[in-house]
Image (cartoon, rainbow, N blue to C red):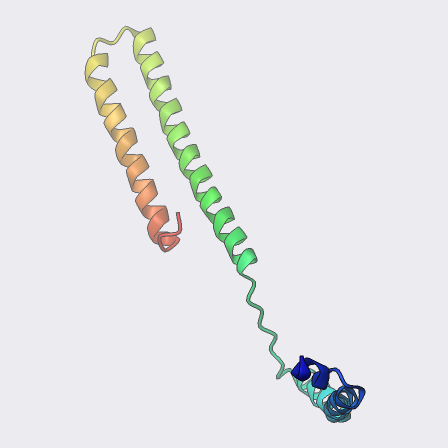
Length: 128
């Protein structure tokens, strides 16, 4: 109780206020020189502003991954549509080789998709 009473005495509070004002006087006194030096560096092109915003990086990573997934989905869709078109053309033409070409086409689509995944993963440094 005595320690709290000692800290809250008016003369102790006044000493703290005066100490903080003295510290602020030093900061405010140095401010014009610092602002002048900062503006000079900005004018000379020597000033670099570097930010580190974790949320922006996370958003950029998420957008990059979404773009990769969309690109892969479009590749698989195009291969699937090509396979469907080939199957329809073979059926209309009455070609009997359909049982052979269908598994071969599916394997080709799988290989192309795996290659696209690998290629994009390498290009983006594993970010997909």
